[in-house]
Length: 91
Image (cartoon, rainbow, N blue to C red; front, side):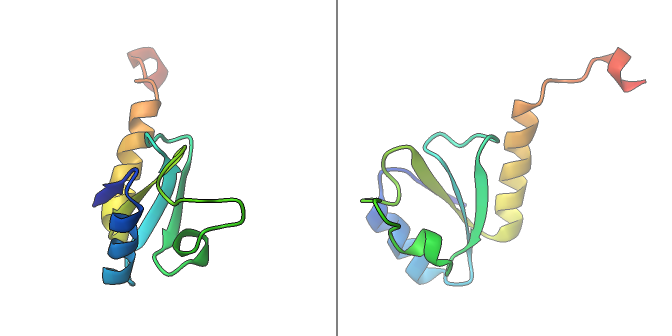
């Protein structure tokens, strides 16, 4: 898995080399609050959208890799966000 922040050239190169890969669009610091999975060929993450000037600057970044690897990372982010359940909650 690769995380692209402030690196449009690297991100676009990754897309070109991995057309069958997957991309999670997320905040610059990934959180469970916003994780949107896309196929690498999806136009919403492979072409600049109206009013956008960059892919990986500002408030957004891209996590790139295999679907399984990205899923594993997303699950870890969700677990970090969820408070640990107490013993009394498990019963």
